[in-house]
Length: 533
Image 1 (cartoon, rainbow, N blue to C red):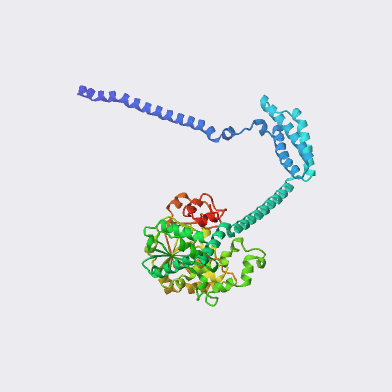
Image 2: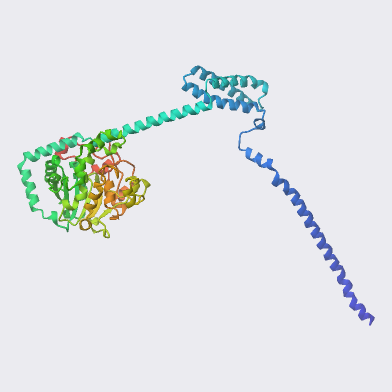
């Protein structure tokens, strides 16, 4: 019995020391963790709250010494005096006080020499060595204040200077616009010569007139709606020729193209002579003058009555009635020409046609345009490229939205579009009486309160809600006044030289002129005689 008891107790005595050992070890580990954590907290506290350390780090990248940060720093005092003195030197020179400006400059150089010497020897300036310089500069600065060279006077003079410069800039811009407009309106001698020579040739050559009559009688294409019909309203012979020639050269089927050209009485004979003498790869060209249109009279056409009004002409050409507030761009003879407004009467001009592409005379065609005639306008009348990529091409930039009639009918943020290459569905035009809409708005703008003179504002009103947006590559604008992305030019079907810098003028943009000139045959005898080059 005792042996078994002894055997039973032996394992208990054997395990007891192990339990004690592990308990002691655990307590020691806990104590060690507590001690280490307290030490970490004590060491970390100064790191977080030590603000001077961060300040020192910031100041490392700045050329500032402890001496300059001192409230008694003579270095800082000298530096501040030099900065103020430099401003007074400018004012003294503007006031023509050159002697005082020289004295200030000399003292600035003296103070800068002291600072330079101190920086070289790497020791701060002392009060003794800088006292004279600080006193002399202080006397000059006091004298400047007595001469009213204070900050208030300086601000007033700067404002006056800025106002003077703004006035000079405004005057220069106005003169630039005026001279640019005059240059744009000027008919080059070569163009005038060409018109005179062609007119002389027309009336002096009976065979030329006979050839023209025969061609006109034989041409049944003028009313054939299976053809591609284009219209141009222009008094510029060479520009119209480039439009026709570039269209023909880039067309897949030039023999299916018909150009309807309308001009005025002055240029009628010259236009007929030019397009009779020259052939354009099988393209048919019809020449008319708007004076022959019997329906074109003041009783039917509101704008014709307005254009004939002496007050309107005085308003846009002399500017006497509005103290010159009318922008110079509106005082252009083209705005008083019926050729510019004839685009709103295309169905009357061509009563037998169903679809027409309208082209301005300042464009160049570099792709086949037959695809325009198969575009679905979705019941709209006008197909045009939108120009509202920038805010200044939205409706509110063309129309007077302070007028209740404009405000009530048109969204000011509606997208504008371009005249110059437009597809017109004449069937829908007649059905919707678009010309009547145009007359409505023209009659309400007699007092010029809805828009200024021109054709785009009334066009935006007339075709509002009736315009189908075309792919931008059909019509690329801006070659007559701004820089255009070369990729857009390369992809463009029609390039428009809108603006004053027309390619046939000396003020044309040189880098864009070749795009137009390659469709001019400078070897033509008449062009050589008139010194085209």
